[in-house]
Amino acid sequence: MSKRNDYISWDEYFMGVAELSSKRSKDPATQVGACIVAPNNHILSLGYNGMPTGCDDNDMPWSREGDALKTKYPFVCHAELNAILNSNGNILHGSRIYTTLFPCNECAKAIIQSGIKSVIYKLDKYFSTDSVIAAKRMFDLSGVEYIKYKSSNKMISLTL
Image 1 (tube, rainbow, N blue to C red):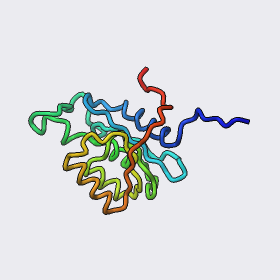
Image 2: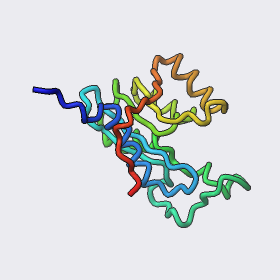
Image 3: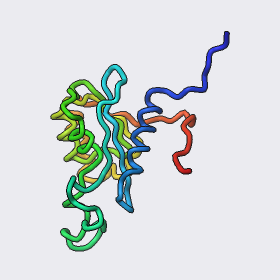
Image 4: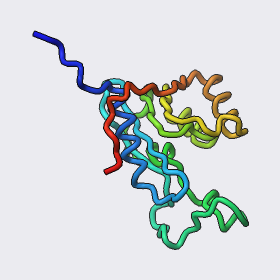
């Protein structure tokens, strides 16, 4: 009997779930998704970047430039933080988070404090910013590993 080799790995599966979650974001510039997974490969929580609950997306700014209060930055909840906040009491200690973009320093703090032990990220396009440098420093000091996601190209396209 031949061994099937057309299935995707756990990493591909969970990164695919994070990518699908990112499609819920209303952010016109950067859609980010996150998926938190227990050591037994059960999904604990999902998140995407968006405005806080109760803040109508249509009433909030989505601009990247201009006066601070006319940009998205003071208002948007990042995907990683939303996934942690959406965990509904699930114990996250020892879990891993799959995220489509490397976490910022603020999300890194939440990841560390929640007990997540591994960050698997797809893109690191802000690697040279103070925020990501600080995040990596905190991860290194606290023992949270961060791993660049490697695709086997078995994933199907999410664009229909």
